Image 1 (cartoon, rainbow, N blue to C red):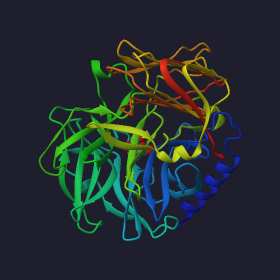
Image 2 (cartoon, protein in one colour; image 1 turned 90 degrees about the horizontal axis):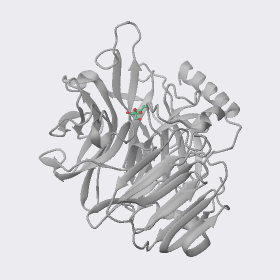
Image 3 (tube, rainbow, N blue to C red; image 1 turned 90 degrees about the vertical axis):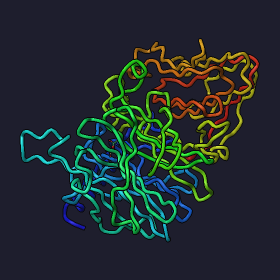
Image 4 (cartoon, rainbow, N blue to C red; image 1 turned 135 degrees about the vertical axis):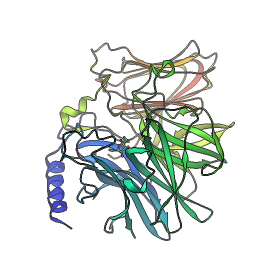
Length: 473
Ligand code: FRU
């Protein structure tokens, strides 16, 4: 361990010790930083039975700063234990941030691949797109998920194609027919977003294999790419910056979504239209992994980078952002869907059950389930502020802002068009809501800061259930 690592450890311990003293709005079901800032999920995996969730972490500043990897573990993805910081920015090749990456499990070893970010500062004229930046691909291994090897530098910008800017990052590794593949997100010199695929026979030496591209330019940068097959369907996911025009005008500053892949992702393929993972305000940089029992689980950052439209009240308390609740990605009727992981069923306690109408002020952390919705009639109001409503073939989530932005912190309206609404699941924590519509075909995630609990649901003919969630945190 070098002297810088030691100092960063000490400073992190002090920040975590002194950190947030106000428990208000801290989540109970969702992962959040012990103190300071959190963004992307990294290195998600189940390894020797234990779930690992690493995260982009800046303990010193709730508005973000130099990134390191914080680490949580869990037996069931419900109760998580904080394990401290695993990767500090302590080497010349990652000194401006241990950026996002993945875990790959094989032969009883955990392989963590990440991007070492370097911002050079020795010249005035760096633009940090084509000059002044390094994006290094780095590997760390672990036999037990607790002790980690030295960092090994695998690739630098000169190993990437020369038509790219210096924006290349976020490795995601998988194995197919005996060969290892690694995706990386990239921005070309023509400002087109794309992903690179590298291949390797030994997980250490990588060669460029191919690229994932759209025919027409689709944004200027693809971050956090992911690729997996679920229920026989091939999915390529990317968080895209720079989408403009009519279709994107009522949406978030950046998007996270997926293309269905027809053919061979590293050979001849065609991509479907891009579809969003989530239609809410707060969702970015999702990453997926396969559980030991074969489920495809995805976790996103319930936040939005470079967002000027809205904010989060908890920055005043010294922390900001959280993850989404883990979701199972599955296919039904040929459609990609998401639902909260089934482990949540173990902690649900049925508290209210009624038809047509329900009103209560009892719960802050709960799941409301509404099914058999008749004639598309559905409206729910949470804490007298957040309206979730189906109208004119559109599922809308809208803040009424009675309390002068305090609950929404600037969020207004998001929507998705759909022909009907048959069922809705609302998963609410102290300061977030995730809404799953039509068996998870559409999902909406948002942070919110309710001043008092309250649910009012109108859904004629439907069965309405409210479950309290029994968690110790
Ligand atoms: C996405 C992202 C990644 C990067 C990381 C840095 O939110 O910008 O591309 O690796 O965050 O924190």
